[in-house]
Image (tube, rainbow, N blue to C red; front, top):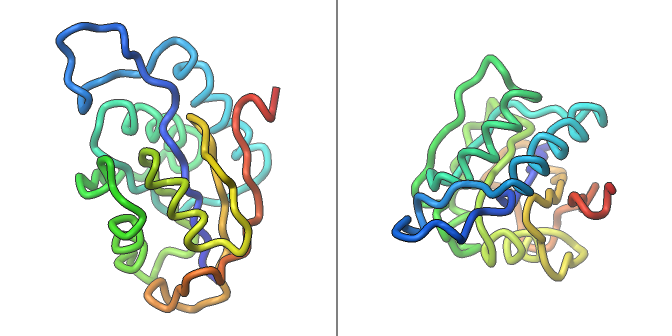
Length: 163
């Protein structure tokens, strides 16, 4: 079995003039939501072997909150190909996850995150709000065996749903 926790970054700050999209930080709501979602995953006993994140500032800030709760002794893998990635780009990242990992979190951006969940899961999520997490399990031995529409959506959580 292989499980992916697809996580969209938390709410970012659009109010700072002169900052590039890539460098945008989290806003105050994002800074509250990310640790809350991380705590939810920890309390729900979800296991994460490795976190792979877009290297954009808002994605890394979100990934860091997950790391602090779920994988404090592991470094986040920064993957520039996840920055504003399409679902096909994200699928390439998934296919290349080392087989030693069974439970991986990928932190990225919309619309790619919604598209990849809808691509892999038998159900659709319609839209992944900021700081949402879709957990999909696959009945495969290796990441490159994953097929379109064959994943089981275990959970779809987001801050407003948990409120």
